[in-house]
Length: 244
Image (cartoon, rainbow, N blue to C red; front, side, top):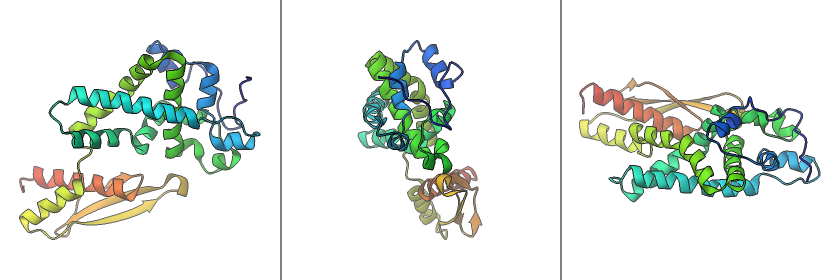
C-alpha cells in the first residue's frame, strides 16, 4: 500500500525528529508504513477518501503502555497498596501526561490532520497528541515486538512514575488541605480559578485561599488539575511554615 502524503501542515518524518532519534538510540525499529498510519488522524483520513486511521494502533498502544507502567509500578514500589499504584498509573498515563511526552518528542508537527483540525490548533491539542503517542507505541510493538515497545515505554515513563511518587501524584490534595484546615480551625479552603487561552488549548490558574490568604497559584489544562495543584502548593507552604 502506498504511503499517504503528509498533510499540508504536517512535516515529513526524518532523522532530525526527536522521536525517531530516540528510537535509533534505543535500537528500536519502526516500519515506515506503520509510522505513517500512527500519524494519520481520523480528520485527515475522512478528508482523503476514508484512509485508514491511527485509532486501532492507539488501541494497541494503550495496552502496551498499561503493561509497561504497571510492571514498573509493581516492581519499583512493593510497599504501596493496589489503590495507590492505580492512582499513580492513572496520573502518569493521563491525557495531560501523554501530551507532555508528545511535546517533548516533538510529535505534534508530524501529525496529519484535516483542515478543520489544523485551523483550530490541532497540532498542539493535548488529546490529539496523547492519542498519537499511544498509536506510535502500537506501531513500535507491531514493528519490533513487545519487548522493544516496552523498552520504549520504560525509557519514557519510568522517570515520570518516579517523579509522580516523589511529588504525591495520585494524592487527593484538596482533601488533604481540607483536613489540614479542619485540624487547625482555619477558614477555607476556597479556590479562585481563572481561565485563559484559546478554546483548543485552554489553561486554568487556581489559587487556594486559606484564612483569607491566597497561596501560590498553579496552572493546569482543566479546573480539576489546577485546583489539585493549587491545593498541593498550599499544603506545602502551610506545613513548611510549621503550622501542621
